Image (cartoon, rainbow, N blue to C red; front, side):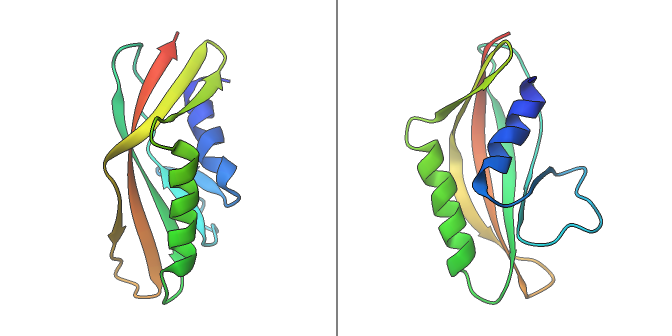
Length: 120
């Protein structure tokens, strides 16, 4: 598994589909997660974003999913292995924020993470 595949694996571990933000299928059904993909080498952390998307008028379901992501990352981050090392996924600043959408039935929480590449 390479770095991009490790990111994909991480975001798909939350029991809803996750897609690279540039390749969301036309027929994708909410809820889902979108995420950015950037790579670098050891000692060069990158700031990445993701969004959790739900359909509904309430914030409770999406907020619960955000809390799940928050708990998995934790205060010290989480290591996600790949073939030549690991991704160290940590909370960015601000970590999460609600975002509006032109469609009032869509709820979105925007997430900032910092990823450090440990190894090759």
